[in-house]
Image (cartoon, rainbow, N blue to C red; front, side, top):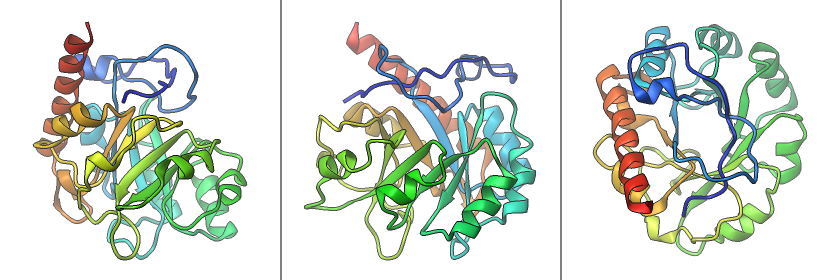
Length: 248
């Protein structure tokens, strides 16, 4: 189920691996031919060292949580500081849960080039109102109509699939990948309980446009592990290579 790809051009400034040398910026979906490179987003970063390690590992995007109730939350000013460490072609993503207009404005002033991610009860109109590219999170559960959800968010760059748990966010829980239909009309970001050990299986099963990880590469909540991030990115590139062989 590899959906429409994004034409993200550009080359990373970070050397050392094929993964990093082919990094693309995470913006601008198109109807063009499929791109074999699955995008990697590492979410919930709170420390400068973790941002640097994520970039070195090969992340295409880093997620900064703007939801105060999260143990991984950062302020708008911290988001500014962390995002400034990113080299060209690595995208900052600001994650919101039912933000107020003032909260959105502060965050966008701090990180004006960010991709937005809406993870709460936002309507399609709420997501479009800031005038910025965005991802829309869908909380997967038996009976959830993902096709209808995606059709109600035609302006989303992609639909991020996460586990349905109490409250907001996936809580590091995986969901049943068989719940994902094959004809989702927007690019799919696979999230929810991913880690270096299972991301290859998830990619082979779902064929997503991108993958998103948070707790699966942590040593504690909000504290990323450089080795786990590197292993996760390596596993994604291994899955890309396996899928490329299978499709040829």
